[in-house]
Structure formats: C-alpha cells, structure tokens
Image (cartoon, rainbow, N blue to C red):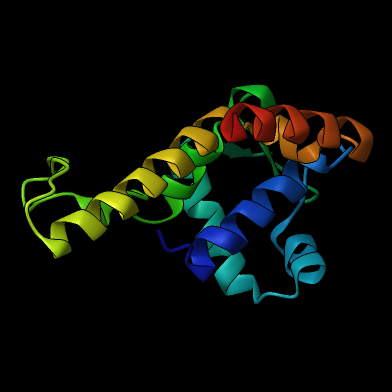
Length: 153
C-alpha cells in the first residue's frame, strides 16, 4: 500500500473543510494558506473531491467548499480511492480481479503476507469516517481505541 502526496493532501483538505464552522465553507485561497500548498494544487484536489461528491462549492464572492454530505457518511477508504488508485491495486491481475492466495513458492508466500496486511488496512479504512477524523480529541481517542481493539484481538 502506498499513500501518495495527492491522497494525503486531498484528505487533509477534506478534513479542513469538514472542520470549518462557517456555512460558506473554505475558499481555495484559505485552503492554500492553511495547508501551505499552491492554489493551483488546491484547485486540482478540490476538483477531484467535488467530482467524487465529497464536497460542493458555495456560490458568490465569499463562496467556498463545503461537504456535499454528512461527515459520518464519508468513508476514508473511498476518499483515498477517489484521490488516487484503489489501495489494493498491487494485488490484482491485469483484469482487476483480486489474485488468490497461494503457498506453492516463496514469492507466492510472501505475496500472501502482503495481501493479508492490505486486507486488514482496507478493512480498517472502510470503518473510519471523516467524522471520526474531525471529532474532538477525547472522542477521537475513544473511537480509535475501539477500532484498535477490534483489529488487535
């Protein structure tokens, strides 16, 4: 699994927008200033997020970007996929079908390990919502404690 800069910065922008208390949202210049990224790059990332229906723009001079749906309905795995390639792409064949686990060779055995790790990461990312990431620190710790217990048991 590889997280690209585009995926990381896009997620950070989405968290900023979700955390914004203003009904007008955040503009490209505001996002550029807070994230220390060029306005051109912010525009590219917001376009991807808008096309995936995570955010929408608000009209007017003071317009900006707001969430297109509640943060509790936005799954982080889907956000990362919209910003890049599917996270488990390395473990698919040319047709996109997931390769089966195998144990007939050393290469195959090690691939099985990486596939299991990838499946665990995907499972976790499917359970985390944008709301979990913008929740206050005390509540966030509770959410992540619960998730870590589910995966460590």
